[in-house]
Length: 240
Image (cartoon, rainbow, N blue to C red; front, side, top):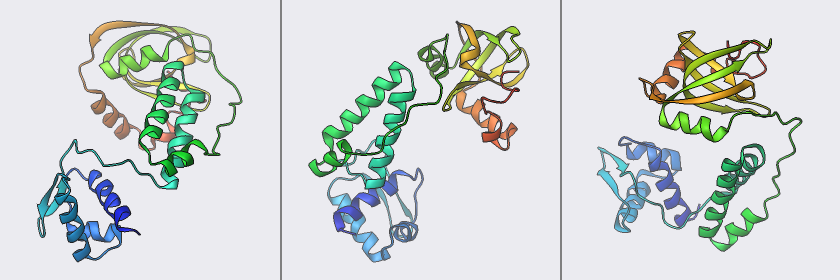
């Protein structure tokens, strides 16, 4: 690995840690000697990187430090392009526009060689088997999740029975053919998931719910030991 590549990898590695991490751990993850690791850290500090720490104590990079010229491996570029193309093709207009704008911004700051690789990527997104109609705006649902705001929804279950719910939305899950709003339901006094294509009406209550959405998500994970099996939109139990 070239030294410039190694220094970039070290910066990216430090960004993953919120607390000081030992030089030995960093050296092992990078596959270099501890002496080389110390030299690389000193070099980055001399170039202005906000890395705090010392041998025997550990190292941490201050939040907010921006990496120098943006660099990606081929696999990282593939993941970025494929992910943004999926969002642009599968999601609502607002998110689709955001995905395309993100790609354009990334392309603008990449070195010429990497920019060509991004623009010429041959990873494409196939057409979905079926697109479901949604009566409610995903923009509104995302805004409520961000604002940690209660919603008053009218939900129609798989049997066609309609019910009125006041819910605390804390996440919006995107499946290939459906979107699921994850909530705490006041009517059921528990966590419930609602397919957005079955929400016939929605109204913002204008009141924040009493917990943080991150707290609700942690509590939901504790309740659902195998999370991926509890929110499948095809399940008849979703939204009950």
